[in-house]
Length: 302
Image (cartoon, rainbow, N blue to C red; front, top):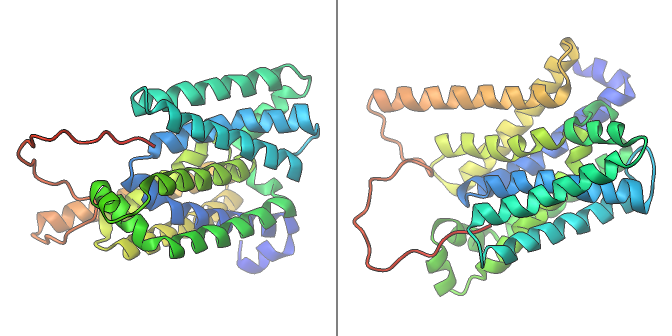
């Protein structure tokens, strides 16, 4: 269907706009999720958001669809989970801390939703999402989140770059890496809360990982990586919605599959360039092993 055809139907136009806005947000955040090795933490927050949505949908303001109050309650809940992860990483391994928090929040959400007659319907919505049912409320929140994320990246660009590639050096230069880490987790939490109803929990993590991974394969500079990640994410969203409209595939899985196809193309291109002697340096290129250092490295945590 052409663009004019999309505009003829209100729900398709809203789905296209919501998909593009969500793609921009995920494309902007994805490089930092990949470079800071927060993929598991992002996936954990996506699953933990079920607990917050369950509290908002069932206990705070019951309804068929999340309201502004429900989204706010869900965001606060997910932020508490993120802070819990940050706290537990001081006592446990980072992956264990993420696992403990997200499975507990996930279990709480399922327990609350299952306790109501309409819980199964709510559970299906948050697990799989429905881009075609995007409402003006979600579009408005995605638009505001897009502007806010872009503004945060512009204001914190130098600090984020220093923290991403050398945390110890960034701390020595006076960069508050703890504040950047918490801030990034808060932005991820806001994204997964709004996007859960649109693409579902099971696909949200993929949208936060795939674009940045593609950029890491091809980009040689940080700003190129962010631009490429955003462009790939938007392209996958448009292609996925178009494919979904022409077939019986839901929009969410179609978008993720298009992004995965782009990853395969980028990987094949990288291997071909390497085979034919093009040694262009990539941000995430494997580095040769370095000699052991007498000083142990500080373990990373989300």
